Image (cartoon, rainbow, N blue to C red; front, top):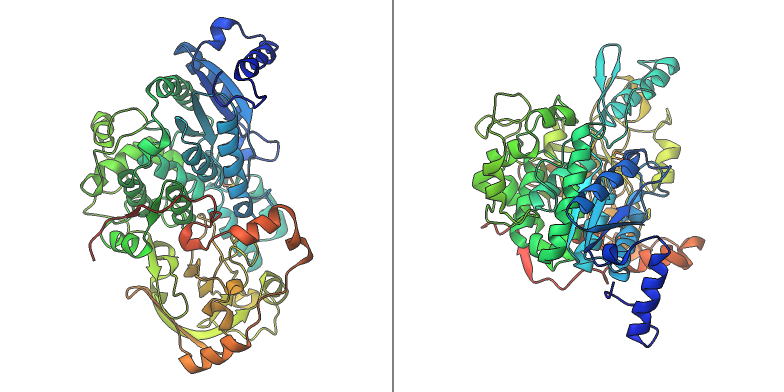
Length: 570
Ligand code: FES
């Protein structure tokens, strides 16, 4: 109760007043003398991924009380992917600041962070890292799958697949409506290897979650037991003073990056892990991450690139099955939230058994990590591609650029029957980066122009400074840095230019002479500010958001960099 007293100029009076007010909640002196565990309430009627948060809070509270603590829930912002305009990424940093300040402002000895949907887990971890109060993460857990005509369906890989069929006139309106009732058949997070699943698994590898916590489906009783155990552990953290900075070390961040590569995880996770690590002075070096990716194969056979769903991964042993295969690449001495090391937790996990979802190192799903980092005159600050999710025939490709200047331009012209576009062209989208859109929306999954989709084209090279949903797939170059709105070379591309993508060589080149590019750069003008850019959160965001290679965090929130990871040799 003495922590972070409200400033009245008399500390004893501040404490007296605080106790008087909290007693109105009905607490006894005995209860108030216990370790206080704050629980983030990220429930919202707009966030179906967090539908079970109220019952999870009850289970966490039970665990806290069984361990002798006092649980106190408090609200934070919540974010759902489809209910966050203009895009949830625009609001992630707001949630991180909210979480940090609420943890710091209120007298809790430890915090239980309940997240799940894509941006909530990174925001909670960013906030907790900066607040540096003992904290433990738990996720709401993935949805179970739905069915349509005997086929399993999952959000939102199958959302995109069926929408593609509808655009190509392969199915009618009645069928797409029937499918929409089956894509999200339960509470929980998207059950493919999208950003939510990726961040859950990376958080477990990071050590911030109880072992086994990443994959338990949202609707299972075990999820409630996991919540109870999380609450009980939070009391231990409060007594031990085990702060996030002691868990999220450079070694732990490397473990999370290895997990990201091995699961063929969402491209968004590299931005989020960079932002989380940045809060603790740890820089993620994209080139070193790429070198790591040459040695860590994709082991998990989940959609969008594979066949299975999160409930299958749960039944196959969850994160432990992956970590066991990854052991030679992990820092096994990294301490986890249990107080034990990652190596000890892997050794204590149930023994392996024959299953199809997690492959052995010698028989991977894809021989390298899921994400490759590209460089070249089009992306001097780097760009990424999910190489495990692309048509391998496009891995080395040169084509004519077809440029869309903005999201609006894309929406207006992509399905125009008169659009001059062919299957070998390269679709380029500008003004969709952190400042440009703003918020770097998941617009990198540029739809195949309707006339080409109807002609059977399933994949094309697409390039932008946007992000892409972890549930999406295709030959899609993302996070081009610096972004076009900041005057990066992407801003200079014109329809008709030639672009060369070479994923094995990690190259992205605009085949235009340096002299011509210098001429275009001279003529380039920054986009005119929009009326709404001048005030409020929008103004703060535009002035402070960093580029993708720095995690799109606010420049004033990141800590001073002291370490770079992963520490792979050149
Ligand atoms: Fe919440 Fe996919 S929309 S996890």
